[in-house]
Every structure is written in C-alpha cells, then in structure tokens.
Length: 517
Image (cartoon, rainbow, N blue to C red):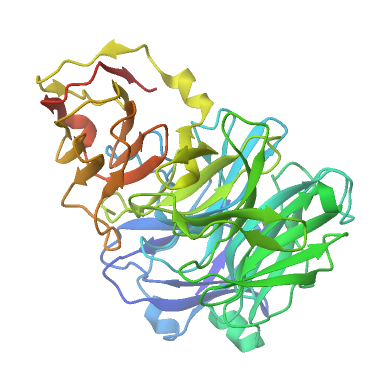
C-alpha cells in the first residue's frame, strides 16, 4: 500500500475483534514505524493515530506480514488532528487518553511551570502491545491535556518504562536544564528489534525545549545484563556527589548503579528482595512531626522497605510492608524537579474498556512516614492542588440516600476515639464498611481485581479515625486513618449517576462532602 502524506496524522482503523498482524511503514528503503494491530475493514471500533508531520509530501509504503492483499479494504484516513473521543463515562479527575491502552507512568517531571506525565501506551488497542510513551501536560496537577506520543518503537525495541531528570548543570552535555529521559529499549518485543538482534538495554532521550520535542541517543547507557532488565529510575544524591540509578533485573533482583556524568554507570549493589519486583523507586521520605527523613525502597505492587542509603548501598531496617489495601494502583512513580515534595502517581488498572480506552493515571498524592499499627509506615494524602477544585463543603445527610448528581465528589468523615459498632457507606454498587469493634475497614464490590484478595485494612479503634473518599467515574480513591490506609477501587461505569447513603450504628461525628471541578 502506497500513501502520499498530506496531513499531520495518519489514522489506522482498528477492529478489536480482528486478527493482530505486524504492519511496517517504510520511507523508501528505510523502516520508520512498526506496530501490531487488528486492521478494521467492515468494522471499525476506533482509529489509532500516528503523527506523520515530518513526512509531509513524502510517499510512504505500508506492508503487512500477511502480504499486500491483506490490507485491501483497510481505509486509512489522513487528518489534521488526533481523533477525539467524548465518551460520557470517562473519569473526570483521573487522566485517560482519547483511545488505547494505558499502563505505567513514566518520566514525571515539572518544567517551566508545566507538569509532564508520560506513560506506557498502546494507541492501537485496549490491550497491552506496541509500547510507546504517551504524553499529557498540566499546569495545576489536576487537569491534564493529551499531547502527541513522545517516543515510538524502533530497531532497538519497544519503549518500556523510565524516568526524567532536569540536567541543571549540563552534566550530560545536552545543554543546561535539558530534560533527560532514561528508559528501557525492550529489544526482542517487536519484529524490528528481533531482526536487528537487540535485547533489553537502558537508553537515553533528551529534550532541549522543555519536553516539547525529543531526541534519542543512539548509544546505550547500560547494556543488557540479564532477562528483561528494565525500569531505570535516576536521581541526584547530594551527600555522595553522584547520580544514582536503580533498576529491575529479573525475578526479585534489583541493581543500584552510580554515575558522575549521567552517561557511564558503575554497579554498586545487587539486591534480592523476596516478593518485590519491577518498577523500583528509591526515595527519601519525611517522617511526620520530625526533621528526619528515611529512605524507602519501593516496587510496582506497592510493597516497600524502610532503610538507610549512603549513595552506594541500601540497607533495610524493616521487613517488607504494603502501601495499599487494594491492587488497582500499580507502578507508582514520583515527580522530578518539584523541590522537596514527594508526589506519587500510579497507574490505575481498570477492566472496563467500553469507551475504547482502558486504565487511567492516578490522582497525584503526597507521601510521608507515620507511626502506625506496624511501626513506621507510609501515609498518603491527595496533593494540595485538589483543594482548588472544591466547590465548598456541605453536610452529608445520615441514613438518607442522596444523588451524586453527575459531579465528581470528595467525602470527608471523622469518628472520635473509642467509637464502637459498624458504619456503612454505600456508593452506587460499592460498600465501604468500617468496623470499629475490630478495627477493620472493608470494601465490598463485585469488581475486584483478580489480585485483590480481601479488600481490607486494619486500624487502631482506640484512636480517632478519618475517612476520605474521592468519587470519580469508574473509580473510588479511599484514604483512611491519617492516610495509612490507601486503596483504589473500580466501580460501575456511571457511578456519578448513582446515589450514596451513610448508614449504620457508628454514625460519624463529622460527615461532609463537596463537588470537585
């Protein structure tokens, strides 16, 4: 198939019930793009867009592994803009792209007054495949605008997870304040890289204009070590005067490396931590009520350890702990270049794909360490920017159903120390049950993630207890017990069109709610 490019975007019709095939695009003899898609012919569920502005006026050749005849009847479109999707039940507060599959947040960074959120993305399906970096921006951390895809698969592999860093001193040589992106080139995950014989390596991309345009460094930073070694996270460690990279190796193994120039890296520690895997973070977290900070080693599921880090090795001081009581939030990453704030954003795993997108990004949250039922533990609160969305607090009636009225909401409830009995908060088809007699919080829903198990958190019933719930389409974010209990729940699709009711024998002392816009 020959196509002369006349518009900025090439739209590929997608039939989600169709057969997945490899499709490649050539400019002359040079391959410039490859994707695994189910091309739509008689049925088109949505269009996956690829930006082709740099090829305007050029004739591109599109080929399929099934042969030229397989693409007959596939009606490509050329358009000036990306396809839009005004799906009515899309989350209001949790970022989702117009179409496609979303997973891990990547390269979270604040640059020149703009928050940049990159993420793993498949523009051509609501299932995992074709890993690219999607891109969204915000000036307030709460309202996000989709941007063009930042990087796409190439001969080195598909684009797996990574991070960002602002190079204030021009250490890497790409310019003062260049934004550097460290990522995994997943060699062997596309046909292009298989043909080239490439394996998983860690690579660098940079931007000289505030994360608007991107350039890939051809040379690898960390060559293949073992398996699918991946997920580099880089930060400056002032005390030891070097940059540190933590990355995942395989099974329960992780690696710490150091560099003084951001280009050459030396291993300083290999860690084996049973029960923890992929997407690691090594972050310094404040301890509430003190001037102290502790290092936290974190992995994708939300498991973490607290310990000490000297710039070379991490020494644990605790066993493995769990940050969440549910498993919807995954692969959280912290923002770079936000001074001392520790802002985390997770991927929110959703099963529903009725709107031809699947999954979302979490609302940014800040973390600290607090004393809890298991010694020091992580505690979460919504980023302070959420306050600007509040439309004014109102009292929430007790034992009376009230309409959520198609608006995202925040609920804030409080019980004094020594409360007994059980209170139920029913939100649409989901019930949050707080059992003060046994010090347990439960969530009852028929939309459990396959990994959830018991949706249960424990707290000390002899102490005051607070509960915050943010209600968005498809998603409930639950924070309780001073943020020590944190969980995200998938709901029915139109939960904002339902009602809620607070009922039970343990009525809260304070119960308020507000609209979030």
